[in-house]
Length: 49
Image (cartoon, rainbow, N blue to C red):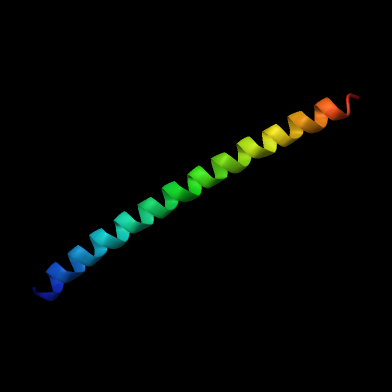
């Protein structure tokens, strides 16, 4: 395998890994947002103003 082919394969692999990491981060932020919304709902129900 020549250098260009290796770099193309390595680049494709790193891009795929990076996209998976970004997707995982997005899912984590979504879960965090949903948890924070639930916490606010619970706090609002416990302390009606």
